[in-house]
Image (cartoon, rainbow, N blue to C red; front, top):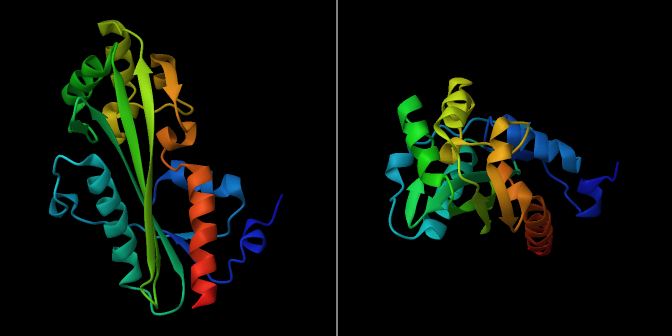
Length: 206
């Protein structure tokens, strides 16, 4: 496997501010060595305005900042958050099964946008870089039986927009994607790699 850390000149620890198994798996896929720390922030403190790009970036940065505040040594903290937006409405994780069914009926036969914010913070210097990726996703028309069967698995309850595209029955709902697939999973890998490469270059020049 390519030594990513050596390729981008990463010389300090990397911390993923998340316990998400999906984001952990994607970082593993790139070959990064890292540790995970849960960023248990109160997301209600981040203003949920009408600008999903600003909102998702602020959520990602808040998660990274939460971990950076507890770090004394040099380390790069990676915070990330993913939201689903349909007709200007942000669909976060469903509150219960009925909410999940409602979300899926709303997404049925529509095109929505998935936004993922990425925030990198170097804990000691407080230098940071924040960016985002967006992907358009189109659902075919879903019937009530499919929706009920999917919600009964429990899988939609911990996912923004009440569906997952990876290793999940939710994949058969998607008829078209315009943009980065990994963004829908929860961590746009090309954007992460290029952003981290730029960020480390800035850190090493300072």
